[in-house]
Each structure stands twice: as C-alpha cells, then as structure tokens.
Image 1 (cartoon, rainbow, N blue to C red):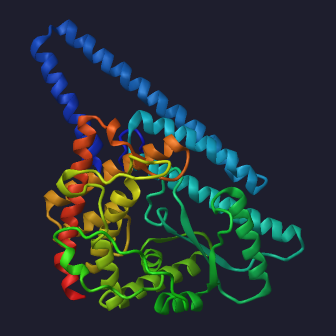
Image 2: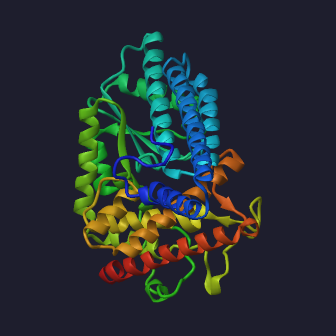
Image 3: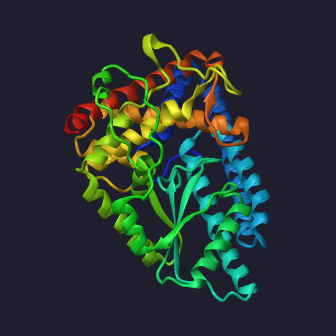
Length: 422
C-alpha cells in the first residue's frame, strides 16, 4: 500500500509528495554539507536513516493491523458486526492521516474498506435469504455512485447504490429486501434509505427519460461576477438534475455478476454520449458554473450564519463540490468518462482543455480541499466538512484562498465554453 508517500505508479499527484520530499531532502543535505565536518554530516545521515526506519516500521505495523481487520471483515458473522470493525479501521486511517496528511492514501484505503464491507454485507444478505428458506439469490450486480464511484471515498462519505437484476422474479425482490436490511445494519445506508433496484431495461429507461416525478427546483444561487448576466434567463426545473448526471458519470461496479455490471456501466456511458449535446446537459452546466464559493466579494469568507457551525466555512458545499462538479462537466464535454477528479484533470490537460498552470493549481486545490474535508470528518467523527477561519494559520489561509481562486478560474473557462451554447 503506497501510503508513505501517498502516491502510486505514475500518479499525477506525485509532485505533491514524492517530489517535494526529495527536494526538501536535497536542500537540507546541501546546507548541512556546506557547513559541517564529515563527522557531523555522518551523524546527520544517521539520524535521517533512523527516522526513515521508524517511519517504515510504522507503515509495516499499520499494514499488519489493517490486514487483520480485512480478515475480520471477510469473516464477520452478521452485518452489525461490521460496524465496530469499520470504526477501528477509521481510527487507524485517521491516525495515519494526522501523521502523513495524504488525502490520496486515505482515499485509497477508504475505497478498499468500503468495497470489503459492501461485498460482505451482500454475502450475508445471500446467506440470510438461504437460511430463511427463500432460495438462492438471483443473478444481480451491485453498483455504487458518488464519492466511491470516483474513487474518492473518505472516512464518512455517503453514496447511492444501484441493484440490477437479469430476470424479474420473486427471488429478486426478496433479495433486494435482505440486501437493504444488511446495508442499513452495516452502516452503509442511513435509516429510511434504500438502493435503486430494477432490471437493465429499467436502468436504461431511467438514464434516457429520468424519473416520472420532478423534484423541487433548487433555490436560486447567489450571482457571482462575471456570470451574473447568465442568470437573467431562469432555467426550467430539471428532474433529478444533479443525481442523474452523477449516477451516469460517477459509477462503478463493486459486487455481483460482473458482466451485468459492465452492461450497466456501458449503458450509462452511452446515455452520457447521447445527452452531452442536449439542452438539459447545458442547464446542469449553468447551475454548476454559478455555484457560490467560500471566497466572496472583496476576499471575504462566506460563513455559516446560524446553527452548530456558525462562523465556519462549509468546505464541502462552497469549495470541494463545485470543483468536482466543474471538472466532471468539462470532462464530459471533452468525452472523458472514466476516472475520478484527478484522472479527469489529467485527461483535460492531455487533451489541451486545460493549460499546465491551471491543471497544477486545480490539483493543489483538490489536495487542500480534500485535506480540510478529511480533517473535518475526523473532528466531528461523521460526515460534513467545516473549517473555522479564525483557526487558520497564514499558510493555510493562503492555500485555501489560492484553491478557491483556481476553482473560480475553472468556472470562467466553463462559462466561456458552455453557457453560450445553452
């Protein structure tokens, strides 16, 4: 597990960890060698080697503890037994994050944790169905949409689940009931939530036509220069406008019959290609482009005015979510379907849709915003990302402002490329 440096392979974020680490070491060694005797230099190297051994020992111990938890999850006797195992897993990952501050490493580990729990919960649902004399589970595919679908699962991220079947039968509805119960008992679903379920034909119809009912129109967003003129023409209500796009674009198969899952993913990709040039897509683009950011006019922070988080910044709503949605919209326009936010930024860079400077700024912005989100989850031990600007150091204040300015730059690019086509 590449947790020491927070990188894997040729990941585009390696400049954020590996490169900066090497450069820092080079500078320290140059300064030390230029003003020290050979004995002092040798002592300095010995200290560095000891520190590195300590860090590698920590990584080895962490891997052992996580491997033991992986085995316990795979052997959990009931869905409720998965809850304390997840809590312990999160404790270890939170401690590692405090030590390494690597969102990339944490997301990779949280992705793996989520998938293990989801697979075990589905296995236990199958076992419960057999134990109750309801027969064996039908052929099914379980997909997840949202943070996990993009590979950006954090400690308490929430997702939507989709359960597809091949043949319409009583066994499928019995299994759907057992799976929903198992997911709730394991903590993956909140009380009252349930996976969307249906056949592949029904899934294709949903992608093409949307739900029959319409959700209430989202409230008008605060105008932000230079986009205020684009808000003069109010967009008509769009059914499930945010969920449908996310479900089609941020989707992955986790459990069940893989060929059925692949067909569902192919159907989502086809629907995206078909709808990319249509009016509803551009209406979604307009909404995303005009999402407010935490940095308001004259450089003032937009703060929560009431409630538990009064005086704090909603990092998720006013920073991270606009960035993720903007990158998704531009990636879809450029016919980039696969991958999460990091991969989409890289593909946009390779295709000339972003210049090198903005791509690097966006990656730094994602790093900063994800870090604040994870720190917020650790503090609250639950979902939600809030930060108090009064507690910011000068460095963090500058990093967050720079991150939001990068998102604003991306809003301008998206406005120029998409809003004129509505």
